[in-house]
Image 1 (cartoon, rainbow, N blue to C red):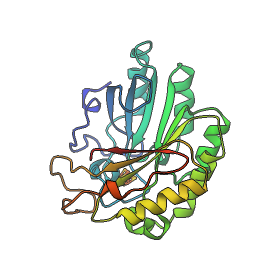
Image 2: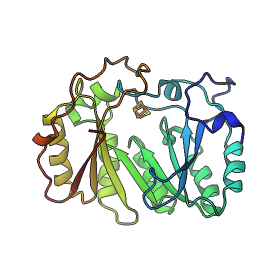
Image 3: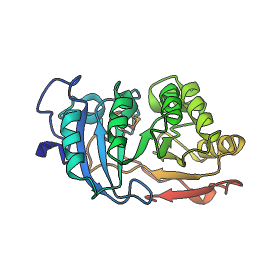
Length: 248
Ligand code: SF4
């Protein structure tokens, strides 16, 4: 694999063919991103949302730097050394040939985790039916009334469909998570999300992540830094699932 792929540093792309270069970079090893698995992370270029707090604008709006073939060469070399592959981004489900890509990786024996914003319920349904996925991390970006403000898209229904789909299946484990920048979200918004998850009978772990500026780099929406963090003591416990707080 070309060395420019094995980094998360945000640098200018070396080539301008985004369509044939869907990969932005690869994190070659992680023990943190895929529960109970050693894994690599593949960062896909492009995203179907425009979250103001996104600290990867170059991945979201920039051009890819590597091919799927580059990644396959890397994965062949890591056989026996890694258990799984995390598909992240950007938004991995924006890559049109993701199904074929997963099929090829799974045939090598890797477990697959998909990080997703949930806007492709059709794809998730198909992948679940085909047994392509082993774990999903689903971002619950915001309650319905704030979804457009946070994500830039009016597609809460699509996200909601994905969440329902996952809550009504038992094939694979999944987790739900929300990133909080207090300039955008407050305690009331989080309580609304918790209540919605209760109604849907969610039983996994709900992670609430404090927004962290990435070394002062500008976010996608050029948000100013947070002046305070979420008051996590004001967040009620959920009846049917655990709540974890990260980076607070
Ligand atoms: S934070 Fe939002 S814009 Fe950035 S990659 Fe995730 S879903 Fe896309």
